[in-house]
Structure formats: structure tokens, C-alpha cells
Length: 308
Figure 1 (cartoon, rainbow, N blue to C red):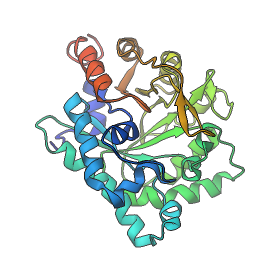
Figure 2: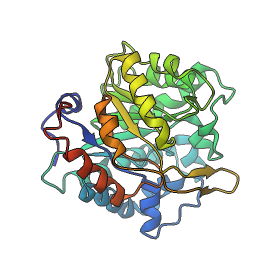
Figure 3: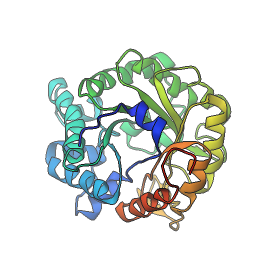
Figure 4: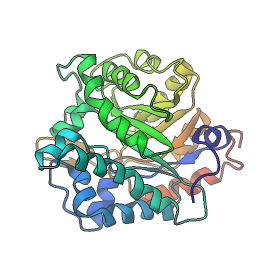
């Protein structure tokens, strides 16, 4: 159902379970995601599949749904022949589909509108490198139009996610300023640094003191890195942490496929929550069954107020 509390109020009261990877669930439903728009293509060609994927995560216990707009941009839609008005409608549809799935259950479910990095639009793995050769001003100009559209669709929060570069994080926060919707900021990291190689403490500090930011953390990373990142995010910003790592498998951008073994252990969620994470879920290759196990694990904490 539509929440009766604000997103910030809910974070102050309990640990909220995020969903898992949207693309892997869509593939499990038989969808072809080989297009450069990835799951965002289905906003035009198969919206019912997106809603069904969201519903699968709600049934698994997710209480925050991240929209299918990660790779949805005006530029990407333009390459498929969609004009500005049509593209704006598709972006807004991503929020509507998640909201529809959320309202089908009696529990409160929040909707987070995904705002992916510039590299996601390039569809060449650049979001795992950053350093695109663009100025902060150019990045801000790229992000602002779709943030305005997504915010206008009335999500509960904007997920500024899979950010590889502290400079892009600053551009995203500037682009979101004044949009009227709270945000969380989530970096993708490797080896204890941003994917662009920056000091992670300095990267988190970009969000310190920004009242619009309700949580800071990491996603789309190895689960083994998540715990230290959560502790650092809380220590640097004083804000709740958000954490939703990958399965542990590695994305091969050249081969456009995953390699390695599943290493996501739902039991780790207890330590993440104990360290200050208030938003906990999974990213790529983490499906509904794992989210269900994660939700059951967090339920053992009791009370959900961070003291159980």
C-alpha cells in the first residue's frame, strides 16, 4: 500500500528491505535484455513485465522498490526514435509501475526512482570506471532533466545509485537540489575505493551536511566489501547507510556476461544493520529467493529499531 509515513520517518524506525536485481528477475521471466537500453526498453515494449518483476520482490518481502529507470535517459530513448515528450512519459511510467506493484499489498512499500550514472547511458561498462572526461557542470546538465521528470512522478525517494566517481556524485546532488524529493547516494566500489580510484571517506563526505540526503552507502559491489563501507559511510556522514551489493559474481563488459560464483550471504545483513545500515538489499544477480532469506534474517533482529 501507499506508505502513511515519509521515507525518512520509516528509516528512523526500522531497517527497510530493498529489492534485488531487476534485470535478473526480468530475464527469469523470459525477457530479452540485449538492447542497449537494458531493462528500460521494457518501459515501452513490456511494462507488464516490469510490474511483475516488482511484484515478485514485494512477495519476497521487499519494502522498497527501485524503479526501472537506471538506464533510462532522454539520450538513450532518442536513439530509439522517442522524442522528449515520449521519453518523459516513459521515465514517469517507471515510477507508476513500481507504485502499482507496491499498492497491491497491505504492507507499506516505498518507491525509489533510480538515477543511474552517466556511464549507464553509454552501455559499455563505463559506470564501473567513471572519469568520463566530462566536467561537473556537463554531468549536472545531463542528470537534471530526468531527475526533474522522475521527481515529478512523486516517488518516495531518488536513488542516486551505482555512482563510480565522487565528482559525479557532486553533480548528481547539485542536479537533485530543490526537486522536493529526498535522495540516497550509493557508490559502486572496489578495493575500498570508488571505481574511479578515489578515497572512499572523501567520496562519502560529498553528502555530509546535505539535508536532502537521507542515506549514504554502496551498491553493485562485492558483498565482502559492504561491511567496511557501511561503517565508513556512517562515521563520515552521521547518516543511515544504504547497502545492496551484487551476488559476488563479476560483470565482464566486453563479453556482456557474468563470471564467478554467488557469494551473497543474507546472514551478513545482521552485521550491516548493526553497523548502521537502514536500507539493505541486493543488486545484480540477487533474486527474490535471496531477498526473502534476507528479509527473514533481518526479522530475527526484533523490533527493527536498530537495537534488536
